[in-house]
Length: 70
Image (cartoon, rainbow, N blue to C red; front, side, top):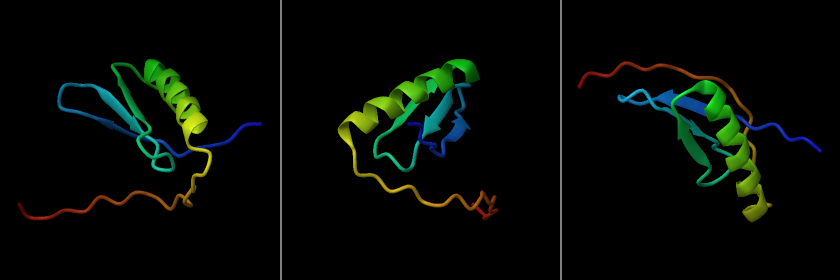
């Protein structure tokens, strides 16, 4: 059985790609390339599912950029 998860990907100031799975508490990883990041997040999701069988998948709505004065 396959399950689909939303993954948020960001790039930090040093160029690392960081992946986070909001539906799974503490499920995140990082890598220098997108291919490696995808491989690692799949592994992280599998490991998180072994520990956390009860999770809630929110419905994805979208992203919004918001400007604020700092």
